[in-house]
Image 1 (cartoon, each protein chain N blue to C red):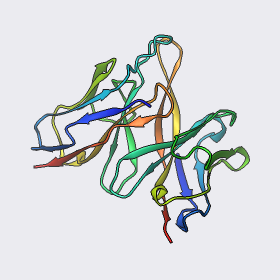
Image 2 (cartoon, each protein chain N blue to C red):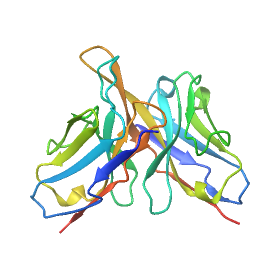
Image 3 (cartoon, chains in turn red, green):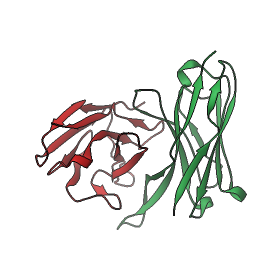
Length: 113
Length: 126
C-alpha cells in the first residue's frame, strides 16, 4: 500500500496570509503508461462531507477559487493558498489513486489565528 | 441538483451485519464509478471500496476484504455496501462518493471524487 504523509498536521494562519501543505508518497504517483500523476486534494470543512479541491496534481475542481493551487511531481506535492480566508478552515487531505487501495494522507487541520 | 444520499447506518453488535445504501439523484447513475470512504470518530479519511460503472470491477481495502461487499442497482440508481462480521474498528461515518471522469487534452480521462453524500454513521458496539 502507498503511504501518504502530510506536513504540517496543524496549520494556524492569519487571514490574508499564504499557506502551504506538503504531501509525500512512498511510491511515485506517475503512471508511465498514460503520463498522468494520480494525486488529488480534498477539503473537509467542519461538520461537512469532504469535497474535491484539486485533481491530477494541479487542476482545480469546479467552483474552487484560484487562490488554491496544486503542484508537484513523482512523490512530492504541495497545496498552496495564496491568501487564506476564514472560510478555508477545515482539514485538507491528499489522496493517491494510482493504485488500489487508494490512500489518504493523515490530514492537515487549517485554523485561523 | 446532483446529489448522493446515504442511509442504513445504525447501532450494530460485534459480529453483526448491516447494509448501507446510497441513492443518486440528478444524474445518469449508470455512467459512473462509485466509492465508499469512511471516517472513524476523530480520525481521517479511509477509502473502503470502489465499483466500476459496469459493476464488474470491485475493489476493497484489506481491512474489509472478505467481510464487505459492494454492489449497485441501476434500476434504482443505488449503491450498496453489505457489511458483515462487523468489528468495533468499523465504527465510522460512511460516505459514498461519485467518480467523475475529467477529460484531458490527450483524450483520456482522469477520475476524481466530485460528489459526496452526507454520510451515514455505523456504530459497532455491544
